[in-house]
Amino acid sequence: MDPATITSSADLAERLGATGYLCDEALATIGFLAVSMQRPLLLEGEPGTGKTALAEALAEALGLPLIRLQCYEGIDATQALYDWDFPRQILHLRALEAAGGGSVVDADKAEQSLFDERFLLARPILRALRESPAVLLVDEVDRADDEFEAFLLEVLSTYQVTIPELGTVSAATPPIVVLTSNRTREIHDALKRRCLYHWIEHPGLEREVAIVRTRAPEVAEALTRQVVTLVQQLRSRSDLVKPPGVAETLDWARALERLGTKELDVEAAATTLGTVVKYREDAERVRAALDRMLTG
Image (tube, rainbow, N blue to C red; front, side):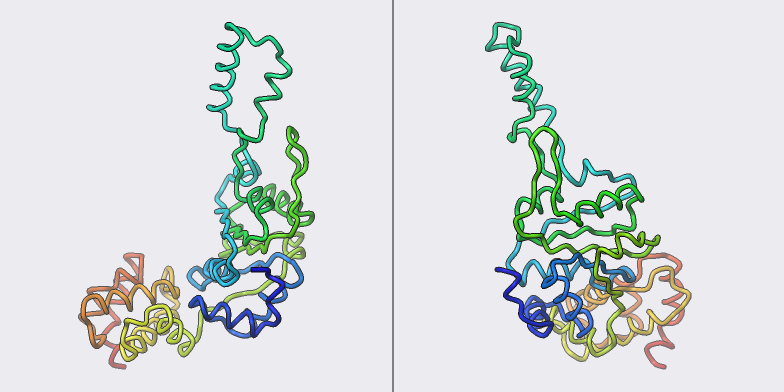
């Protein structure tokens, strides 16, 4: 589907909602602007607020391929752009030697043949440029270093890259680019200026109830509201190492439904706590407070 068919922020919100992703007006508006203006969208926020899920929902809503680049410490342009299939190149050289009676007669032609398209391993960014229209998700860009940020800025400014052995590859249509950051470090201003920006908050109670009802309709409404209310309380605590995100809310609701739980009580919450908190210290603090939180 052509991204240009999205006519307004309300239209985008409706299409995302059809995939199960419920967004507020501000996020729908910045998403619409990013698509219509062909600008990268930088999403920051706490883990579990739906940053990655937005890119996935965009791809599904528009019927476009989702190409994901997972950033990590030490990632460089090679991992993001392209590489050469070295084992296949060696096999190709051996085949040339066998055909030439044990020697390669024309060294220049042999070398040129090694850098043929068939030996090229396209990484996410090159794939996105070639396959666009597509959604390119650059996930957790804050884990990468300054040099990689500079490389990203160059690519996102021109939507083209040069492969010395093959030439320049340009996107006929710029891909929809979504960058996410958990803000473990600050993204440089130059990259931020290239992007439209939005900070995603955890959803409020009613919107989170709606999200769970949409994504996990098998969970009873009363149980959904109990789970979401308790998760909202957990997020308000300042002593947790990692407050739960929406993904954990969904896991908790589904786990309780799978166990046949009709009403959330202290025992049911305590035995399934591992679906919503992932640190020992957090589990101990929450268990100690469950009775007060559920009855208070």
